[in-house]
Length: 242
Length: 260
Ligand code: FES
Image (cartoon, rainbow over all chains, first blue to last red; front, side, top):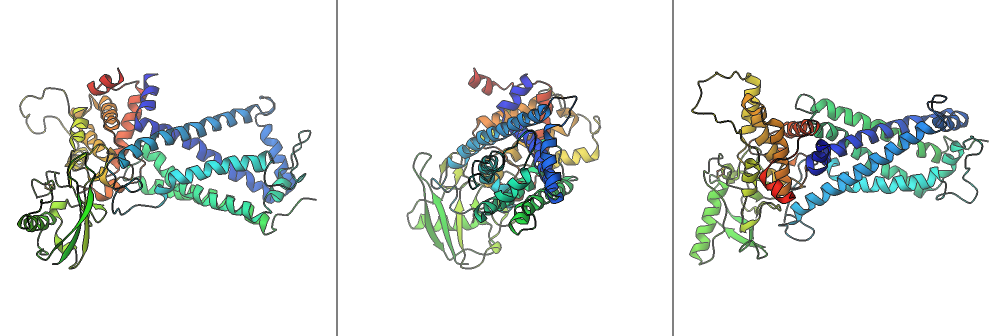
C-alpha cells in the first residue's frame, strides 16, 4: 500500500500511472482499428462483429459481462490518464511560469530542438478527449450527426452498425473532425508509445531506436486504418447496405 | 566584432525585470562569451552604468556556475559546451544576441542573469550520497567494478549541476540532473544499499523544490554540456518503480516535516 502511495505522491510515480493506463489505451485503439476493418467485409460481417463483442466469453461468461469488464477497465484507464496528466501539467506550469518574461511567454526567445510530437501531448490529448465524447454520442448513441430516424438502434440482439457508420460519415465537417483528430492521435501515439517504455525504465541507448520504431509502427497502423474508414465511406467505396 | 546584445536586467528577486539593449564594437572572435560580457561591462562601468551581473567561476567548463540562455538555447548554439567555453567565433559580426537567465520556479533570479540554484544542493542532500563511512581511500580495485559500469557511472558523474537541463526543459523539470546524481551511484557497488530509497527521496525533494515533471521530451539532453543521456532518467524511473514495488516511502527530513 505504501508503494501505491509512493506512486500517487511523486511526479515519477504519476508518470508511471500515466504509462500503465496509456498501455491499456494503446491496446484499445489497436483492437478498435482492427475490429473496424470488418467493415470492408460487408454489412453482415460488421454487424455480426458488433453483436459478437457482447458474446465474448459466452457461455462461460454471461451476455456482455466481459464487455463490461473491458469498458470499466477502459474508463478507469482514461480517468487515471487524465488525472495524472492534469496533476503533472499543473506541477510543470508552476515551474515554467514563476520567473517568466510575461504571462504567456517563459523566455524572450526559446528554440526547440526535439520532435514536434512531444509538444502536442497536452492539447492533442484534450482534442482526443473531446473526440471520444463526440464519437460516443455519434456512432454509439446516435444522438448527434444524423438526420431524424437515420440512426438504427439495436433490436433483439441485432446490430446495424454498418449502416450507422455509412450514414454517420456523409457530412464533410464530421469526416474532417475525425480525420484531424486521427492525425493528433498519431502524434500522441508516436510520442506516447516510446515514452511509456522510457517512463517505466525499460528504455536505454541500445533499445531506443527499436522502441521509436515500434512507436512509429503502432502510430502508422492505427492512423492509416482509422483514416481509411471515414474516407472509404465518404468517397463511396463503402456504401449503404440494402 | 560589432554586436547588439538584448540582455535581461533585473534588480532583485522582487523587482520585475526587462530586456535592455547594449552595443559593443570591441568583441573579438577569440573571446569566450563571458569575456565578451566582461568587455561590455567595462564599457558600462566607464559610462557610469551598473554592470551586468552573471554567474561564473572556473571558466574552463567544469564548475557549472556559468548559466546563460543565449538566443533561446541554454549555453548557446554549440553542443556539449558551457557558456564559458562558447567562443564568439560561433557568432557573426553584426549579430543581435539575446541573453537571459535560467527561468524556473526553483531557480529564483537573484540579479540580472544570476539565479539561486541551491535547490540542486537540497536534491543532493536528499539522497545523492552514500551514508556508509568509507574511511580513508581504499586501495584501487579492492571492490571490483565492471568496466562498463564504471564508464556509465563516470558519464553520469560528469554532471556539473549547471541547470541547463531545467532551463531548456519545457516543463521546467530537473529530472536529468536528479537522474544523473542518482545514476552515478546506482551503477556502483557502494551505491546499491540505499539505491531505491535514494530514488524516492531525491524525486520527492525534486518535486518539493517546485520543479516540473519530465514528459520525456529530451530538450535537456540536447543542451547538456556534459552530454548526460536520457538513459539516466529511465534508470531513475525504474528505480522508483522498484521502490514502489518494495513498498518504500520517502524518508527525507524535509518531506516529513512538510507532510506532518
Ligand atoms: S564558469 Fe565554470 S563551467 Fe563555466
